[in-house]
Image (cartoon, rainbow, N blue to C red; front, side, top):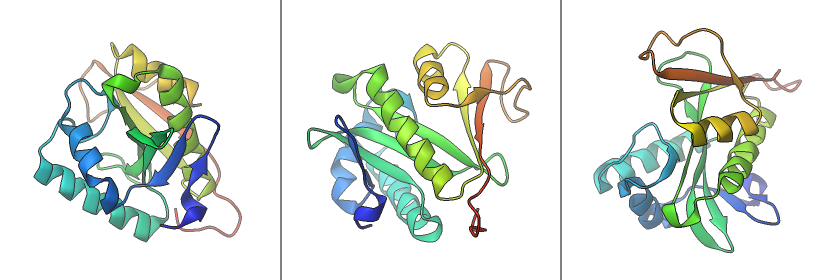
Length: 176
C-alpha cells in the first residue's frame, strides 16, 4: 500500500493488511482468546483468506481499511474500518488483539489511530456494535472517541449497543 498509509507511534505501527500478513491473520482469526471484535468472529483459513481479499479490495477502492498492528515489529492484531453490512453510508470500526498482547491501552491506541485515519480520509460516520457486557470493547471504543448511541440498533438483539463517531468530510473529498 505504500508508506503514506502507515501510522507509527512510540509503541505501535499500523500498516494496511497485505498478503504477507496472511499467516498472522489466520492465527488471529482462529483464536477464541482474542480480545476485541471482528465482524467474522472466529473463522477458518478459507474465511480468513476471503476476508483478506475483501480488506485489500476495500483499501484499493476506498483508501481505508484494516491495519495490521505491530508492536516492536511483532504482529499483535488488527484494527480498522470496513464498509458496514448493516447500515448504509457508514463504516464499521473493528479491532482484535492476540491474547499475549492484551492491553486495553494498546487496543485503544490502535483503534484511535484507525478511527482518526478513516475520518481524515473522508469517512463521515463510523459505527461499532458491542455487547453490553463486553467491558473491554466498550472501554476501547469509548476511549477512542466514539459515543454510545441512545437508540437501540434495529438489526441486533437487546444486549447489543451501538457506538458511533461522526466527522464532516474534508473539503474537496466526496468519496465517502
